Length: 491
Image 1 (tube, one colour):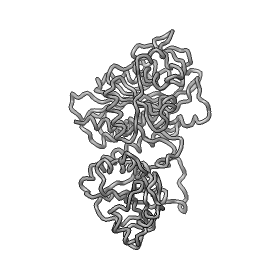
Image 2 (tube, one colour; image 1 turned 45 degrees about the horizontal axis):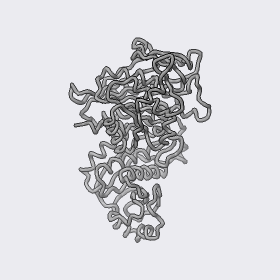
Image 3 (cartoon, helix red, strand yellow; image 1 turned 120 degrees about the vertical axis):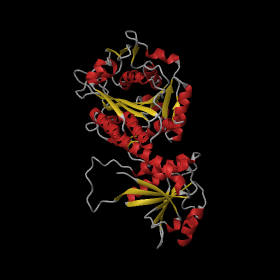
């Protein structure tokens, strides 16, 4: 389902819409843009505010029935007392759109008077989040139970022309997020390495990108022993995929976006507990984020060179699976002692990060649902950021804030390298419980020699609980961060 977005100027009182939404901060008086409408309704909205029946609390929704003319229904949506207005508008628009989607109104209008470009764009992205739903694997409801999904949203703005750019950008980002979330929500028997590779090929055809796909045989020629040791327990063919978007100067070094694509992670021989293992279909959200970002970047037509790369496989226990204590050799030549086969994502990324050196990148950003330790450290609100260049890390973190996907830098001091030193090999694939997210990043750092940032999105790329703005499933993180970073590099 695609949400059609548009912007137009006009008066709330005469808006011919099934539902008009007004996003309000805590304690905000009646907006000027609602006064004419409120007068036609006998002052019901102002009385509601005066009586504090609606206080503008975060995610609070108050419904008012419309009059004979104008909006048929009106909702007031609270944004609370958030310090970041852009983020609050994005969340409020998501709440409004999700309310509309559940209500079966089909289309709605959001009052956006006085909003600047960033506020319009982020609110439009939020609305697309709220209206999106993964229903591909469900039997449709009966005709009597069917409600019209939200398919059309109009922003009521002061100046239509100035809103066109933000709306176009929001549509592009919305399509990228939708693609990433669709891939993430697919079950592991559907979203296979082959499907991810085919999705990249389709993206390449639609946007004139060069797409390179390596399978098991090609990776063997590249001596990718680290990646292949994860894939040796499954009959599915692993894939390393690169999508090249070349709209910048011919000699411009590209930005490279890298994603972890574990289409399902059992933990291998170091098998995970059965409880909640079904969520391990989301272990490919880094790869989904790369694909979604490339979709958005191409739709925006940004004048820059970007390469999106991901490594995809499944981590399965079998008679051929890699074992704790095994030693493998990565394509860089480093030997790795396998301590825990559930620390597999870093083994895939090790060879992928070494492989992307061929692009002579200006910067590389990888995203991976890499460690539960990062969730312990930062919860489900913030992404962990690590890197070998503090200036670059700061640039990525700033992009994450603009995208309403906040990241926080964690240390990567040389002392942490000691935790992954092996007695029998060059390094080992886990440093134990202490500083688990950091030692995972330190492991990846062994395979890069260019400006690099690692984003651990284990706590932010998917949710196991309904967040109010979106249901259980993929969140789309880190699509926005990737895109905002690339946009920030456009000169």
